[in-house]
Image (cartoon, rainbow, N blue to C red; front, top):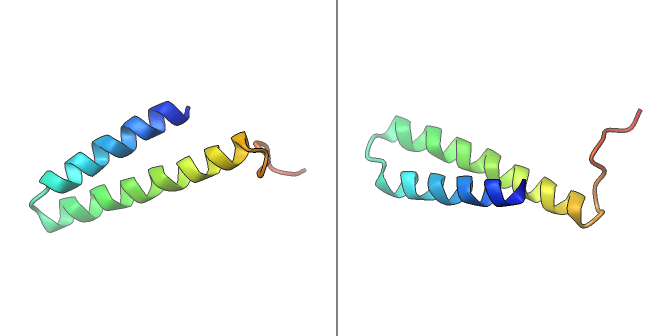
Length: 56
């Protein structure tokens, strides 16, 4: 899963560099922020710092 997130993040960064329209840049930046947050969570889960399932 983290490999796919890494690829997605790199693609979003490339899109952000090439975006001209302000609205498009904001949309891409929001998607990039979400993907980076997901990467942080995935890394924490892999390191055992976070639980994959929410507590009951």
